Image (cartoon, rainbow over all chains, first blue to last red):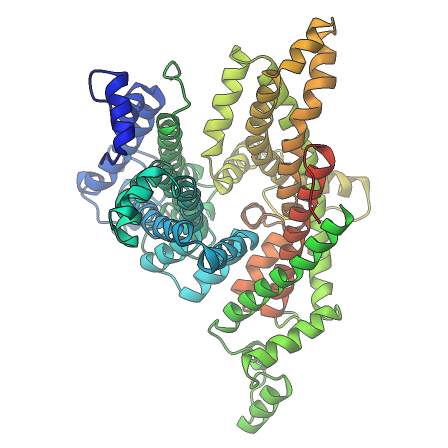
Length: 301
Length: 323
């Protein structure tokens, strides 16, 4: 991981006897950050729940039981049942698989795609940079909800469509971050040295510039995951996005909202899981930002 | 300065054109026959009549011809008729705009004032218990989706307590024009205003706090204290002036929401505003209305972005725009 310039490595060697690379420092700071543990804990619990959760109850996710409609939580149905007697625990856990998949897939793709575009724009510069940044500006200027509504109506429902749409809109953050990181490194000695040694453009970009832009990109990925889950649940809530009978946290909420006077708990529960998911990603993002920021003193946490 | 503003205004025209072309193309690609809505009630329609109507409305023209026709109509402030309701577009947009303005102005004024007050409190009492509670609360509240918050408020105040109505803007049982009608109208506003105001507080409180903290560290405040000014004057007169500059900019950038409304909140409360109109017109294939709503929102975004830059230049004497 560590691709420090020789000068920096020497400097580190002088500063302390034990080798302390950038990522080692970041990891140490991250471990000292109490907020990071809370975020990580929430995330792991959610991940574990949606992976094993559906197997813990003897109900299929669309198993209708008309004699057990809209029940309160009980030993038989841990979180109660919906208006068709389907088990809410099973449906929320399956819905969580969908929502978390969207979050993680979008975060990973935006960082890869946005990061590469940003590095390319920053390193190549010129007309390409100009065109790409105008595109980013345009995407920023159109209100997000307009593009979300139009694109998801156009693409039609489905997990993959939602992921593609969200990546198409969210890559801009990562691109901006990567570009500004590259701009600040482009003229530095280690890049010049690599170029002098005959490294190709791609090699300079991927081996020398990418590792240096990685810090902000990781923070961006964490926050993008939260933003993607928020967008997916919002779209599914509005009836676009993931369509019933496939459950998602968003459409479970919409479905339950029609019976809000009879079974308000069923409205509360899916939202609580959305809240936990957003919370875990925001906590992680916050802790990572602090850990990656060289200006932060380690006394905080 | 004037030259700068003019140049920026001039630059915003191509941006708006790009956005309009983009959205027009996307809506053009939508599935569905534009004439279907109009003709679905007519049983004995002959195919040649259908073709004649398509030609009459220009649906057979290539996309760029349709785009420029539409653009020319929009410039003349005559965007056409709603496919859904058969009324002129502005007859549908104006009531929605009025409803949204009532809702968002109330929420923005309430939310931003509270946010700035709370932000100042947090910064002045940094690391106090109050600051910790506020900072933690806004951080947690940031992760609460707006639609869920709205539904939770409905559960608490409408379902459990029965104090407030769940949705809409009027109760049909109340006689219009009476005092009771006004009270009823205000009751309908409370929950949506609360949800929007809370999201304003979440965004601005943190920002106000960090902006004021940044200023409080600076030397000129030590000077102000050293010459014996009271803490109220130091914070209220000297520190706030500079701390508010970035906050004002952020407020200007978020102002388009006042015109565009919030699709999510208006949908949760079935509130007939711009955000809900945007949603229903896109979902209902009423693209003439949708395009006009989108263009109004895009124009306000461009305008307030420009305004933010101008305000920033006026408030911060260190910034000079080159013309």
